[in-house]
Length: 607
Image (cartoon, rainbow, N blue to C red; front, side):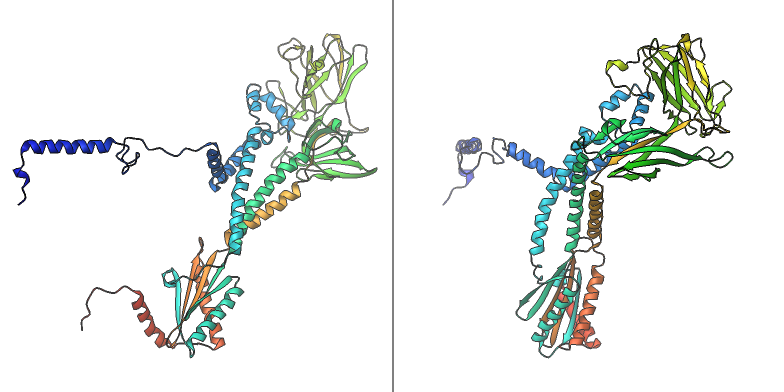
């Protein structure tokens, strides 16, 4: 007879419990227990996470870079990074605009220039984004190409055992004499029908059940890959083509000739692969510059309506005439000549005290407003006791405010006036530091006329001459009007700012852009879907099952399945191996099929 716990001695019970507690404690703290690993949930040791080595981190970074999400983010960042290029003037396209911006914002210009906001597309940060996007696209596309190539070689998947579980499912019962032969023939007809619809097909037969599996829409993924490959092509073409392209600017005054050589450009930006002998040999003379303005009293009065730089081009010993207009460049050799800007170029002549000419030139004055109020700089470096800088304003149609200040009331030459402020001192030209011809640094110069002096600014009309301060000589505003002219409309020459650009990558960029557009259309509008037709021989005919499955969004899958069922029925009727069951029989079969597919009811049948 066994003893109960109540019969045990209390001291013995306490001793036994203490031993058990020590045993549990020893098991918990004993990390050498072979039944409990050291990192068990009740172990004392911390869980050791796997550590990535240098190669592991490189692989992780590459996977992050080549993900589709990263590519989309980089594409967005590239678009955002290009925005400053449309806000700030770029040295490659508009060097005069950069000079003007520097004059208007001398304090903030060095900061923005250090950030390369005037050379956005050549900046290191823009190039970094560009190269990262290129690497991301390449790393993303190459694995997808391999996967797509494997999918193109693969057979369509096997027919599911229970097609009725698919959302888009249809079933039809047809009568037949030889049910098994009729079932095989039905699938043969469906196979030919699906092939005609552009599906890849594969037969899967088993016993008395015959089926065909069909798949189409591979052009969708092909278009997707084509789109991404075209983007890579655009990036490569722009990157490589930039090394063989060049862009130069030249300001031509009416009557001047430009030779297509490096020394004859005002500014030149060329790719790293463009040599000194890469420029096509030709010359171009600006004959006239025509511009029309809206007359007084009409809507938009004073606004320029049309610009046309009429030039004579000499190439391979032959001359031809042409015109350069806004958005209508002139093709010369392999170059395109664009019209960037225009303005007036007053002809100034400076003589010393002895009457000798020390300076004469038609000086381009840069327009400051829509009425062609223009600002220009004349620098006289030799022939006088000291160097002179003349800062001038030109007004094509002069008006006077109540304060006495001049303004231009109209862009055409009606009553032109030239005002000059004279500065003397070292112009800094002999220091070897490049200086803009459109900027006069007056920091270390002495002002001789104008405000803050006792001498009024020089005011000249075409053909007039005025004395320079301190007996230095005279300055003349030459009248360029032809003999017999009755007005001042031709008294001042005009200039045209031309940009000569060559980029052989343009056709390639266009081709890749069209490929990208075509690929995008395929990816958006070609549906990817699978279809199955299954025929099972029954006791009194053939049971046909149809099912469709969309790979992605395909709102037309149900309609496509209905068209397949209807077309297959017409082909079967024409073949004659099976016949449609009477409508009454089909109505009787429908509830039976529904009852067989529905779960059994728990409610007992009541007679």
